[in-house]
Amino acid sequence: MMGGKTAVDTIVSSSPHLQSKETISGIMYTVLIALIPAVLVSIYLFGMKSLYLMLACSIFAVATEGAVQKLRQKEVTINDGSALITGLLLALTLPPDFPMILAILGSVIAIAIGKQAYGGLGHNPFNPALVGRAFLVISFPVEMTTWTKWVGPVGAAIDTQTGATPLNWMKTEGIMTDYSALFWGNISGSLGEVSAFAILLGGLYLLYKGYIDWRIPLSVLGSVALLAFLVGEDPLFHLLAGGLMLGAFFMATDMVTSPITKLGRWIFGLTIGFLVWLFRIYGGYPEGVMFAILLVNMAVPLIDRYTAPRILGEVKARG
Image (cartoon, rainbow, N blue to C red):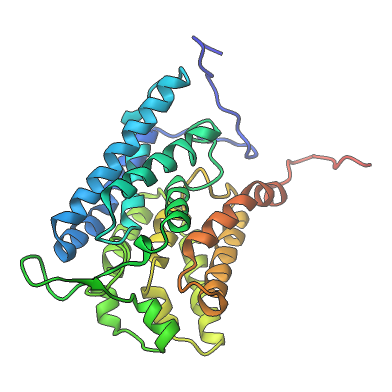
């Protein structure tokens, strides 16, 4: 201990250990840059209301982080960008016309319960943004499933009546949405899930920077596509529709709540993909990304335990 702070965090992976000049804030702000395409597309499609929603979630997530850290008499670390990321990711999972006060409440829950209740960054077992979204889905199901139907760019007429998402249409009516609409974003849905192109652009940037492991998004997306194909569903539709892209690149790859081993990341991603497929095809809810990631988050300590490499010369204890 140095000055009341832990000098070195516990290392749970086997040696050798490589040191990096990367910082938490550097990584977080790079993730923010990667989310810019999704942010811009949502503003283009749904107007300034989407910007206000993203700003509100981000501001109150940061404010909650600082307030809870003050109450816990801990160092205030709101400048590291982690709370900002949580607020923005939560906003991107919300419908465009979602009530502002409820979005703020979700941000408070995401940080206070999903993160700080476990000790803060590095200790939370669940993705905080998804904890906030789960709270909102359970508490306000009508508001979380009321979608704005996009019919033109900003300045054009926007139909604010309830409109089904592509996954809803597919599950209830068997109607498939055009691939180009799913790819570019002229569909109903949450702010961050309407444009697969925007999410893919940001995800590829994070892969280029080396801040996410390709094994996780590949195993998530690949398993969903393969299983959909095996049961006669359209694999490309399932890849482009809903929150799968956002979940695979920005939620499942969270460094804190994903496994530390290469094999563990394969298992993690494949299990998420299997659950997404299971929920979408056989579940009562048309989407399953949030539930899948949160459920497998719980298994991460177990995955790490059984996929950790053996130390050279280690002898397994008997009895």
